[in-house]
Amino acid sequence: METELAALQGRRHGQGPGDTPRWAALVVLAALGTAVTETTNPGIVARITQKGLDYARQQGVATLQRELEKIEIPSFSGSFKIKYLGKGEYNFYSLVIREVQLPSSQIRLLPNEGLALSVTDANVKISGKWKARKNFIKTSGNFALSVQGVSISAGLKLSCDPATGHSTVTCSSCSNHIDSIRVHVSGGHLGWLIQLFHKKIESSLQKALNSKICEVVTKSVSSKLEPFFQTMPVTAKIDKVAGIDYSLLAPPTATTETLDGQLKGEFFSLAHRSPPPFAPPALALPMDHDHMVYLGISDYFFNTAGLVYQQAGVLNLTLKDDMIPKKSKFHLTTKFFGTLIPQVAKMFPNMSMQFLIRVSSPPHLTVSPAGLACTPDLEAQAFAVLPNSSLAPLFLLGMSTNASVEVGAVSDRLVGELSLDKLLLELKHSDIGPFSVELLQAVMNYIVPTTVLPKVNERLQKGYPLPLPTDVQLFNLVLQSYQRMFSTTEVAIGAGAVGTPAAEGWSHCSWQARGAPFSRRPLQLLTQRPLQTSLNSGLEMT
Image 1 (cartoon, rainbow, N blue to C red):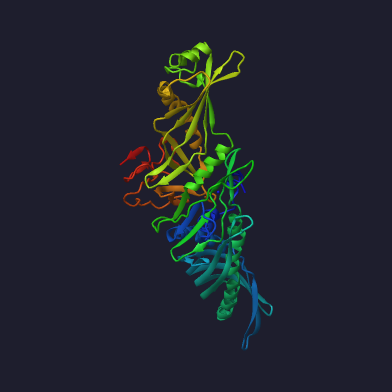
Image 2 (cartoon, rainbow, N blue to C red):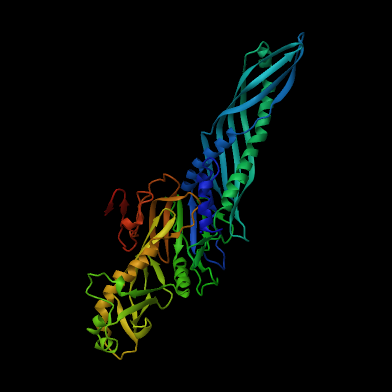
């Protein structure tokens, strides 16, 4: 739920005129996909349905309409000859398109190729000026032109650049047809003569327009849509430690109902990138077409994150006494711990203590219909702080627990919140002699949830970027957890359609307010009974 994200975000306010990013965004989502290969499974699966294409059509046709209105029609001239009156000349110039109406349009999937755009029954209104000359007589006036029954058919081929992993789009075909043109000439002494030759004039104008329409369509794809594709990041820098690889693995594959796709979906170390020692599982999104866009996120995505951060040695936290709430009855001093383990106070009287809490092995997260869970292996090394500020090791505890993960989304970022069950302690090593770890059970059950866990969740709530195009916002989001994967649905730009409830038996959530802060409450994925949260002015659960 990725060129670097920071660079992409820096360009968000520098988009060109019009709403090109709005309709291009869903087409980009459509291209975020590949056919399944025999050797490489994805970490993220993307799908766009006909419902999503219909939304893209609304945005795309609006952009196409504006581009057609910008067509520059060249001036043209000709001559006329009437028996007894002789020969004359006319010139039509300053032609301006006043209005373009595209009442009927469609985007449909072309299996194994891409997308087909069609526009029918379009109308165009043009105005301009004319002038004519017969011998020494000169006259001029205005004209109005009505173009009716315009149809456009274009094919969009979606692919990817294997060298960069970028998605690409080209206009593979284009054709257009005009049913009729009617011209009305007004003003001037010879206007009635011009009107006599309206068929010739209309034919010339029709030829001029026919040569321009597909030129505009092809140019719009190459100058607006394709450059927008190139701004899509294939990697997203998260912090000083890690990035996410969202590159495409192969060209997209279209069926009659969906455009499914696969992204690498893998965290990697910025210092030394190397492949993880485990492979992504085979994933398949459920055959559901109720929403516009689906993103299936594998447990592989999360587990590569745990691997990278654990190997970088950043999954640790040093606890000091000033981090413990003052009102707490527990304190990190040898005096307090001496009440539990007498040899601590005896060997190191009246000294401060520190705990180094670290993850001893890469955390492994599992996704199931019941939600997201992991069993982190933790260690807590206790130290006494000597008068010279050096540290004297006291003992090393092993801590195991079951953790559940609540997942949500804010704007274009995936966010989470971790909760822990009761800790199970093990004495791995002692520098002060043997003692029972049960004596420390209550202390660690207090310290870890109140001091360590908030630090972890503070980072998780900053979130990780989803592989979404520029200006795409999550709206009416539904999260569903499956075996080894969970999916997000109803991704939209601006006002999206209302999402439908998930199937009975699956956990699901729906955001009713775009941009609602995660701090109010994360989306819940930890129950097998249907659970729905509604974020508007407050929080309601049923």
